[in-house]
Image (cartoon, rainbow, N blue to C red; front, side):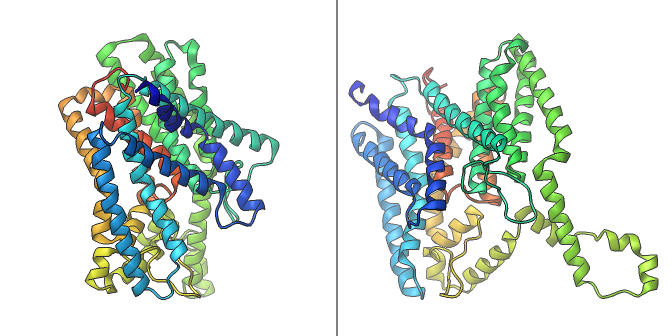
Length: 457
């Protein structure tokens, strides 16, 4: 294994340069006309590299063998999807369909590759230390660049109209928000592990910087991720305090409480909070315009009601999903009208589209993947996640003490955040820039329960 150490460090080290790749992508998108960005090219090469790793360990690892077999089956299915949809759809944009499926399979390849790498090197390399170090490096690059661009006035804005928020030198606010949300619990974990007394609160600075960045993006996801991360940390520390009475636990608990109070106090002036009320005002004004005109007498007696319209369930749904529910309804209608063969094989990228109406995704990953891949394809796609979930749940049932294990709970929080964001806001499993973080996080969470090893836990 010593001769292949470079494979491990190259695999894990790639995580730390993700923000740099994203900034280079932003520069290319804004300044260079090209159908392929540097991010797409580099990440595709990395996926090929992971595939080579699986082949290298084919004879030594059962996980590598299972993974290669699974990926071959999945690739054959995607070929069937492409062939049949090229017959069913008119027009059919082959380049866009293939590009989308490249993004779809990215999670499966990198997740399975991470499991193989972590299990193969668990006895010879401190996987936990290497992974946490590179995740922390990525976190620091993002937050330093983000805050630096805000201070210098060079940050790009997250929204074009009505709403407030910034995205530093990164191109897509939704993807950046998802990345930061995934990294928040893992950056917080660094503070939990390093802080032994209140004097060492500076170990929480990386988390504080990332939390500020997350909040200033202006999305509900960013603010919610900060609150959830601190909330889970608080619960873990309270449970651990009863179990251990350690001084370090008390210090971390005090810091987490202080930060929760600060977030609570500043939330009403945060961009996400302001944007939410801007959205509510927009919905209320829309309802006013839809109402019939009232007489002067009605206006005099119903002024209060006119000032504040009551939002119904559809408005609340729009507030949460930001109009994604309209695209969801459209895709559901297409899927319902599709023949059974298409329901099984999938509708392809963005369902049916025309030359006038360009392909448009729902931007809710699980729905997008289900409609695009069909029943068979979606089951194939989600299979690795289900297997990992079963392993983790099984071990958790056997060892409830995991509830006050910081590593387990923070990695679990990161995975839960990713799944929640994927379901509601998308840009997790259809965006390789985000997927790589999820893949290594989920793989590590699984591996610390496959094996009891100091190198992993």
